[in-house]
Image 1: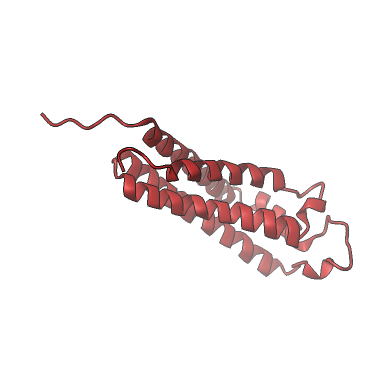
Image 2: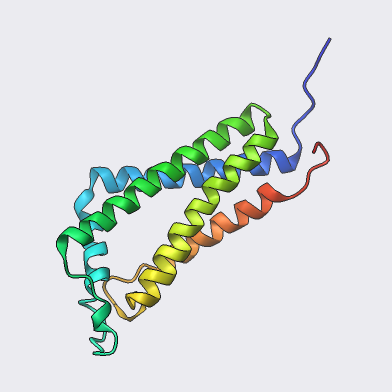
Length: 164
């Protein structure tokens, strides 16, 4: 009688952390699609730099074209949807015990999230567009939380397991 071996704690951790980030990204994408205007305003204000210190040495970076602002926002949403789908697929692979492919797709999805929140929101939004200067449109704390959650999940997913 063939039985499947019990799941290791590391396998379970990889599954649940990937699923957690997948759920988060799916909810973020869903919210941005169904409540388009709320975060559209956020992106517009960050790119326009209209609530920063108005330093002449920095204001040349501002993007005030509504078309470019909306293009950036739609690109963010598309990236969020793709990251969510990759992570959902990674979670599904974990549940199917296809650990090698689960690790690969979880890694891809987690890196997508880390790029969006690290390079996109923290580096570009926070530094290039000086989001840190805004009291009203500053998403750095939220971006850092997601970046760290994704980073912890990535480390766990990459840990060697006895089954490997």
